[in-house]
Structure formats: structure tokens, C-alpha cells
Length: 112
Length: 113
Image 1 (cartoon, rainbow over the protein chains, first blue to last red):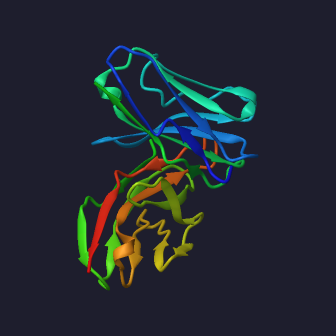
Image 2: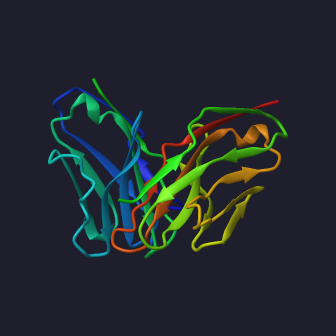
């Protein structure tokens, strides 16, 4: 596609449930990032994938958060046992090596 | 660690007014600096960037100059339009290691006719 695609655009879940968020990066981009945009917290880096290298997970807030990237393309961010403080907009970005990051429209997660 | 401090909003201006949104940073080495914009209902878009000291990034009438001596990257526009209403984010990255962006908290700009 022409840009970074994220799905779903909105997700409402109950506390304690698991959720999966999907990101389709721009074709040919080797780097993929997940960020979280929370009220009062701004934009926080979560995780970074570059090619076939081990991901940089230094921004993940807890072990309930994990992400994978299959075949160097699509990525899934999984949040287990969701908590209300996980409510946020989750943004995905992709780039060529050391290039400009292009962002998707995000997934708005609401944990009730 | 690396960080960005951005002028808090919200900012409300009349059309054709002059805009300044202040941004300062703390970083080791020589980061690249960015302004991203988020229009209502849309994702983040790169507005402009500068990769080394004294570089000026410009786009759509917006400008920002990389000032290493003051560790600043203030965003300016001489005459704002209603269509500039959005949230503006200052950011930096080191282009090494994870290359992730460090963002300021964002400044909401509303331009009234």
C-alpha cells in the first residue's frame, strides 16, 4: 500500500483480556517502530525492529507487552491481561534504514 | 538520557498572526531534529527536519533552525491559516542504535478566522 496501515482503528476491550494490534509497514521499509500516545504521557517509544536483527524492546512498559514481526513485514503488538492504564493510541511507523519515519493513523485502545 | 521539552499549549491565534512554538532538547552527540504535525483525525506527518547545526528546515511556510548553542529548534510561521490548526510535536533521534524518536508532549494550535 501507499502508507503505513494499522488495524483495527479502534478497539474496546474489557480489563484482563488480551488484545492484538496489527501494523502493515510501507513496502520495502526495513525498520518498524511501535509508539504509544497517552494523555499526559506524550508519545513513548515501545519497540523497534530492523531487518532480521533482534528487536530493541527497551521501551516496553511491562512483560504484558510483546511484539513480533513476521517475514520482515507485518508486525503484531500484543497486550496481555489489559489494564485501564493501557488505554492509549498505539502508533506504528516504518522507515528505510536510518530514514524518515512514516506513521500510521494509529489504533485507539480503550480498556473498560 | 535524550529528551525534548516543548512549549505547552494550547495556543490560539487569529488568522495571519505570527507563530512561534518553542522546543529545546537534551541529547548526547549530534541528533537530528524534527517537527511532526497531527491534523485532526489523521496520523503524524513529518513537517520538517534538520540534521546538523545551523541547518534550517522548511515546509509549507514553516521554518525551524537547528541551534546547537542554545539546544533549540523553535518552529515559526509568519502568517498562520485556519488550515494550520493541528497538534505539533518536536522530536529528535540519534540515527544510531534503535533510531527511535524522542518526542515532546505536543502543542495544540488553533487558528481562528
